[in-house]
Amino acid sequence: MRYTWPKFKLCRREGINLFWPSKYDVRKNRKVPWQHGENMPRLSEFGKLLRNKQVLKRMYLLTEKQFNSLIIEKAWTYAKNKWVDHDKAAIMFLERRLDSIVMRAWLAKTIMQARQIVSHGHLLLNWKKHNVPSYLVNIGDKIQIRERLKTSALYSDALVMSWNFKLPSWLAFDKTSFTIEILDLPKSDELEMPVDILKVIEFYARA
Image (cartoon, rainbow, N blue to C red; front, side, top):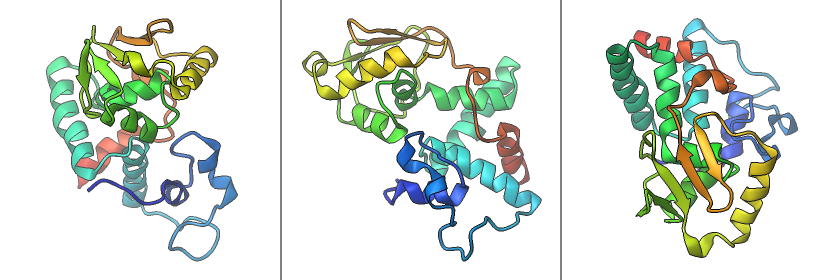
């Protein structure tokens, strides 16, 4: 079931800004939803594993079914067959989602906005209209803003952001044609994550 409730409540529950913009800054309100007092309750070892899992899942705003499919099914199978670490494979699959790519290319400020851009049909994938945020991109794929939308204020702001922030090495963004090209598979060591991915893997191993 898709999450449609206030996003700031998720940030307060996890005690961190999950979505980057300042309006989700938990320092404004450090109280945990549905809890009395200012601080997070003390967690058991299993509770710590659970919170790591919840933070990562909520950063990408996935349902439990979607998250489980990526982390346990796709990433585990890829890690086993390609002889790579499970945690690195997990991040790679999360970052290969089309909505994640749009956000990393600074065409969107949040994962919510990126998903809206994709689902509203603003993009062409390899020159064909595409509106599935969960699509896993491949090396060589090209994602382009539709011609009639390139002059909109939304993408004018995105162009300014793309000049101010560095793109990850697996992406190239042509600012003239508004085209994102997938150069490589995502790499976890280029991302700053507020969670320990190994604890997420351990959570599912223990569950």
